[in-house]
Image (cartoon, rainbow, N blue to C red; front, side, top):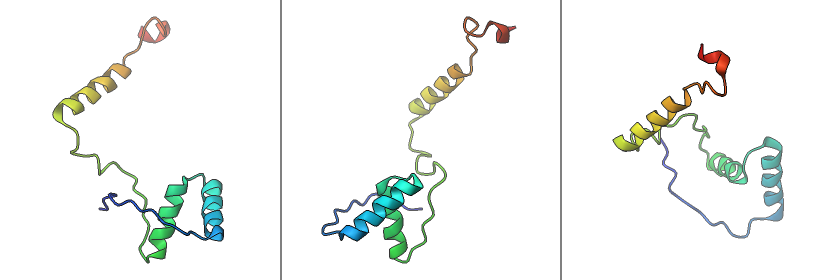
Length: 89
């Protein structure tokens, strides 16, 4: 699992590269950062596999934070009979 802790400042990016990345971001609906990371990763010969889970979050919440989130989710599952009288029967 990758940890995304590094930040880079890249100088002297050629105009054609900048235009290509911005065009790709706009056409794909992705952020510029995401497109630049994909290009950098592939250019380094690595495979780019976007994360599709929350593995970096698992275990990062305190018990209190997890309980608060669970309580909020439970509260959102309650039907407000004033707004939806037909569903509360």
